[in-house]
Image (tube, rainbow, N blue to C red):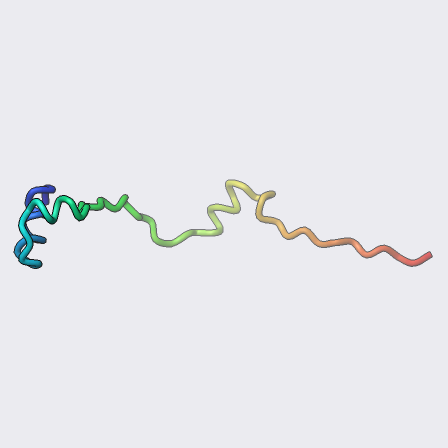
Length: 63
């Protein structure tokens, strides 16, 4: 869909003229490709194993 087609659809839906639609700032937003939608943490940890390790505090013994 082009910007002109989009403006025409908004004009038809709202009953406003094209100039009003343009001044209101209607525009198309193209979403980036969002694949993959899941994360394989096993693969991530194989690539960067140190970054995702838990760090535990060591207890100090009272002397």
